[in-house]
Image (tube, rainbow, N blue to C red; front, side, top):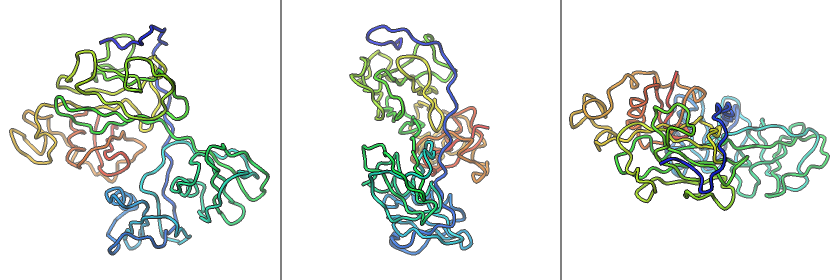
Length: 368
C-alpha cells in the first residue's frame, strides 16, 4: 500500500540523513568497582570488551571491572564501590548512546542529590547517574575541581543552576534509535521494531518497511508495510518519543506476510520522507526466509555450511574475519539470539564483510 496520512498533507522532498551522534564511550579507565560481585570467582577475559560482553550475557550483571594485566573479569550488581585504581577498567552493562556536553562551568544544579560517587571523568559521572533510579538521567553536576563527587538533578527540574566554583554542569541527550527484535525472520513471523526519538518526536513519525532495493524512500515506490509510531495508520493523538511497533497478521493493507527476501526498516520524521538520524545508523536491514533451519546454528538440511548455502543464503567469509578488529564506529547493530544468527545475518547482507556478537545491540556488522 502507499504510505500516506489519514488526512493528506504535503511531504517534504527526500533528503540525506544527517550524520548520527557518535556513541558515548562508557569504559572508565583506572577505575575499580569494589564489592557487589556476582557469586563465583573472577572469570578470564582477554579485553575490557570481552568483560563487557560477559556482563551483558549475565541477566543479573549491571556493572563490571576488568584487570587487563591478569586478564580477569568481575561481574557486578552495583557500581557503588567505585574507586580509583591504576590498571583497572570498569563500566556499565550497556553504554548510553547520545551526546554528553558541558552546559556551564562554575555552576551546579540547585536541586538534586549528591551520590557520593567520585569518578575521574564526566562520563563516569553519567554512568553513576543513569544507574541510580533517584536521578534525572539528563542533567547532573560534577565537582571536577574538588573531590569529583556527582550531583544528579532532581527529576523533572531541568537542573536550574546556582554558583559553585568547584563544579561544572552537564547534559546528556540520548540518541535516537531503531532496532528490530531479530535480523532474520521466518515467513509470517512477527517483526517487532523498537524506536526512540527523545529530542524532537512528533505525532506523525512513522516506521516503513521497504525492499532493500529502495535506496532512499520517497513518494514512490510504495512502502510494503507501514505504521505511525502509535501502531496505527491514523495520526497519533500526541508525539510519541519511544516505544515499539509490531508488524504481523493484524497489519492492514494486505501485504502480510512479507514475501521472502531482504528488507529495510526506516524511521521517518513527521509524515515525510526524511529519515530520523539514529545510533547505530538506520535503516535496519533484515531478511525473511522460508527454511526454519537457516538460523539454528547447525549444518543441516541442504546447507553447504552452518546456516548457509542450499535453500539458505549463500555462504560467505564472515566467520573468517578477525572479530577483534571490528569496532562499533564502523558497524551497524541489531539484536540476535546467537553468534550463528549474527554470522548468518552478515551472510545475507551484501555489504557486510565481518561481524561480532555480544556487544550492545547483540550483533555488530562491519560494512567496510
